[in-house]
Amino acid sequence: MDGKKMIITIGREFGSGGHEIGEKVARLLNIRFYDKNLIELAADRSGLDAESVAPSDERAPGLFASGYAPTLSDQLFYAQSDLIRSLAETESFVIVGRCANSVLYGVADTLNVFIYAPLHDRIERVMNRYLIENEERARKEISRVDKIRRNYYQYYTEYRWGSQNGHDILINSSMLGIDETAQLIAMLAKKKLGG
Image 1 (cartoon, helix red, strand yellow):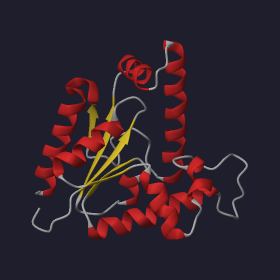
Image 2 (cartoon, rainbow, N blue to C red):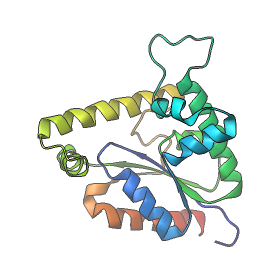
Image 3 (cartoon, helix red, strand yellow):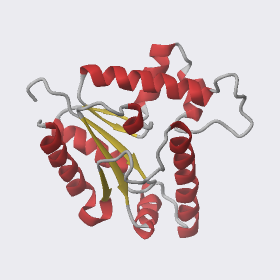
């Protein structure tokens, strides 16, 4: 990569395959991958207890949170954001979630992607991946998780979750499938970022 960094941020709908696609993109580009592993790294770096803050990962503070004291969600978001910015100064990586596209706003070496898929494909994927036998339960779980992600994203950023604002590209993962979507993102990253 000639010393040039390559950072790919991935936002995703639940059941669209965003995590798996992110892992594959990182392997294709031979760069690091961050998702839930960022919780422990950020907690260690900031002195937070990873076990205590983990339930707050990618969650907006509750309705009755004090405006005067940072919540666990706030503390984890700020710790992760500081870590993401620090990593962006030194290495190439793929990161899933964590409002990374907004956190890294203005960083030149980034490709910001949002992955979505039709609901029927997401239902099938969630049923298979999480062994949910009932289609309605899978639909409700998708709705629940997407609502949590949307609230988190819209609480900590100025963008609307899933919109083109703040993203270079929105990709329907059902069009090409997981492997080819990962290959497309890796190709776009090389083209945009010169890797």
